[in-house]
Image (cartoon, rainbow, N blue to C red):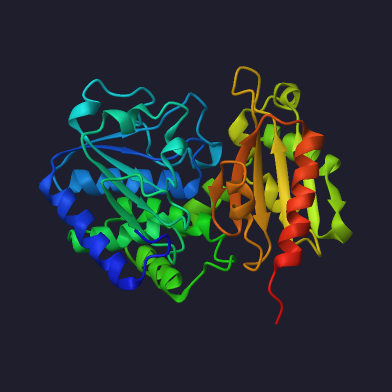
Length: 340
């Protein structure tokens, strides 16, 4: 299947997902590890939609890392962190997950599943499902799911509209990123009309910052360096930083956006060492300030991936080695950028 599906292909894939959901009764809904707003919003919305259809649905997330605090207002109490015993009997619905490796270090859910549905909007999705619906033109996976729910005649209740709004507002950067299309804005209006509480979501996601996260941000800002004439901004967080300020790994979510906002920066990178007890590999988040620079291509060179303007990868190299790699790749990408 093409990595950039046209409208006809996407419509056929949409019908295939809808038919698969109608034909099956038991589901295991999951998303990528270290989930963001689109991942958690899409996870919850999918579960609620399946329950509304009378299906047997279980939400599952691999790994032991706590969920980001800014999403604690979402009703995710039934989310399971251990694979259910009957996973081999459930259709796997993976949302907002570009590759099977993002389902966890050991993607047991995928290996156990008798049938897999893959619904996403990442342009580099690996198409690991038996049925794949990947719309790279969509602002978020939440936007793709709204089309699925419409075809399934699922009523857009306030409970369903709110997690979809979380998915939409976070992946568009509060409707500021280049993926904020007319369709995305129309969807936002539809979700608010359906009962999504805009103020509640704003307070939960953007005005509930833990003090330890603020301290972590301060360390990242203090270490930030500019390279290549100011076009590249790089910072890092050390393993001990988390313990010293009382933070957990999800607290690093969103810090890179402060680096990306630096005047004149085309690309920002945050290198972070997971807290003690976690994976030994360093994790690198990348952001581009415009669509002409494809940071997902840089991430793919190291086995990662993502969007053109937001991507990431893992590495066992030192912080200095990673920084040197990023500088080389940034220069190469800038030279290769089309002009005019």
